[in-house]
Length: 278
Ligand code: DGL
Image (tube, rainbow, N blue to C red; front, side, top):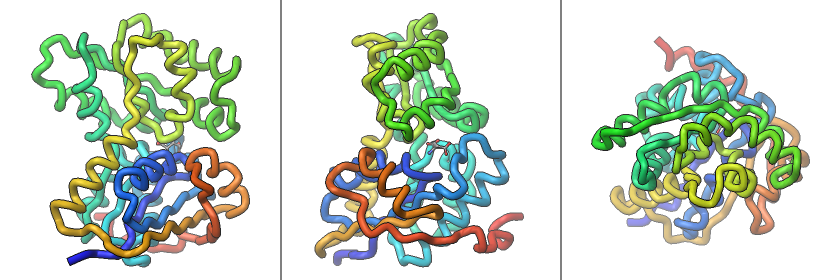
């Protein structure tokens, strides 16, 4: 039997649209509801407890929309809040860390993997542990993490492929170049937009991992395995905790395809998460 409920996807803002884009590409028959918490973004500079609280509220909003699955399309929320959300949520919860880590381990030839992400993601150590766990059979495995906080602003500003982006990337990526990594995980939803510049700095032989592609693969596998595929005409709804007009302006290059449209404003900070925390 088909399940025509939508897939719920959330991010701290617009970055998760790079994940949604891959989900729509890989399971085009599925309806989706996207929530971007732009009003409280960025998450990458917030504390562990705040990221958990915000992520629970995002989940509660999506659950109210009767979604059949929740995708945490945010690396920062995945590293800090997946353990909590996956315990309290009664539909499958998909995160972005393990799919990205597996793809990196598969891609590396010299065992040297770079992870670039927000400060909160790097600080959690979760991505690094996931890569080490997935790559435990590679004896010479080396993992180098680097926070690149300015990349988020560059992506939102549309400065993806110019001299400012190049200079910033050259400075951030220096330690990864020195270490000789052959694979770099774009462990922040905004970074795929800067892929061209990152690639210019790292050189053509370095593989960049866009975890959104791997995440969409996980979504597809779960839908097929659990018999949750839809069979009706898909719809794509968008919600933001900030101004819908601003959301649509900034979001459109992230998503392409004439989306998003008809974005609605929603307030999620009144959801009471106390019952979920012990
Ligand atoms: N979406 C966030 C992530 O993937 C980046 C933006 C933020 O810091 O909120 O880590």
